[in-house]
Image 1: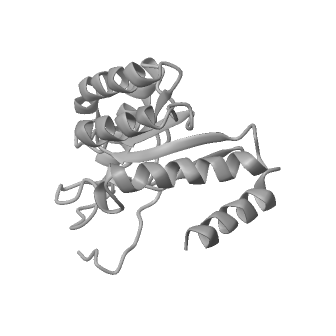
Image 2: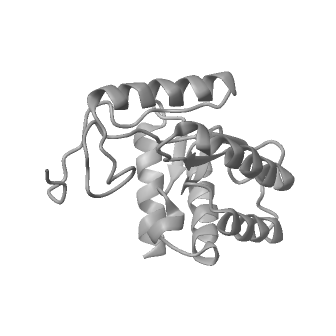
Image 3: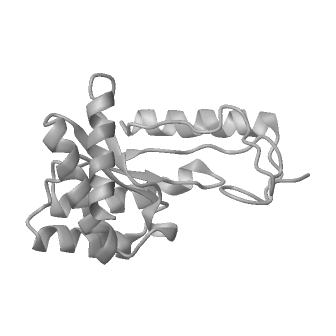
Length: 183
């Protein structure tokens, strides 16, 4: 229920507020979670619950898989209509691409879109990485990765983000193991 969720959020923030200052509301919402009409009210109420307990918390929204322009535009139109464009501080995206350089033109366009709604928002790369072997599911699958190509990919991604001043993280320091991934 809604009240159960909000009580959970408040309890978690109360417990970890001395250690955690940034809270991300859902992961890759544009893939499977909900439409903008469902997610944005969820984002607003969750963000407001966090701020009740931790007023100086930084709120991260969306964690977009790739660059879903239409989803983002609909979401920000709803935030604008609700006068809640300032409910988040950051928007994260996950730009999985076999060649990391291929994501930068869309990054620029996406950043422009987000800033057209709120120039204070920061677009940050929140998750990215590649496997060290051929995988059959999830991000960057069905490509013959090796440990060497993984290392080259990681360095190119991190260097590309650094020279563009894009805050970023790297995911997949070691390979994940899921039962559905088989050699």
